[in-house]
Image 1 (cartoon, rainbow, N blue to C red):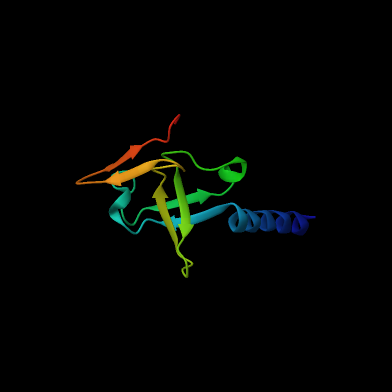
Image 2: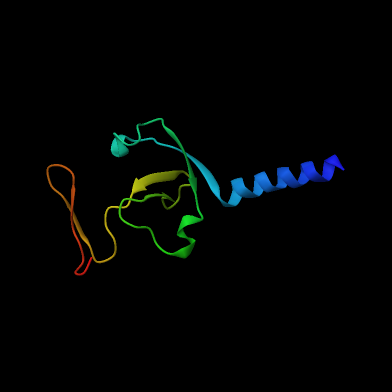
Length: 97
């Protein structure tokens, strides 16, 4: 009776780790002061099932040819113009946004 329950729990944990949760280590200082280099973060992949990210959301992605995940904050959305000049990013929203 105990083995089936244990196998079910282990299978559930493995499934959640493979398909929902992903550990990420912050490697650059671009997220400072929110996240410092070396910080460990656990991301989840279910939030975006109903649409795309909003401004300010943290997202992970892997670069072409790399399996390593990168963590960044969404600054602009389709139609926005984003410029960086002598400091932080400046966003010009798309009309109506």
